[in-house]
Length: 168
Image (cartoon, rainbow, N blue to C red; front, side, top):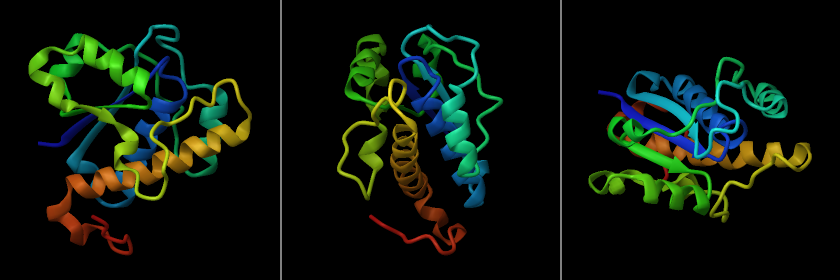
């Protein structure tokens, strides 16, 4: 059974699709894609059916991640049942998830950056109203957290990660 992980932000056009695409790309690069199912969703339905923000797509593409096939959707009640982890990009998203989550599934909720090893950030900042540097920072934070998330969930498969340091 693959680990099923949902990444969550506000509109599902910047941060959470970045996390989905990066995690999927890293899992593939680390020969662990068969161990994971990644998806993303928004807390609000502002952009349902839309592709990620063009700046998000462009920044990800420069690092080798293809987000062009992703489409925004909103978190549903079924997501709390279907996914093993629902990882929010910031505290507001996490609070939204806590309010919407059925009690038996509260243990599945967390922040993506709880997995970050190199950065002191607690939250992935929203790059939407900023410049290109904001999208690059999102990628830096997400790459760091995603590789550690994959590593922690595949500890018994450490030999599958040649050249990747094995942190705690």
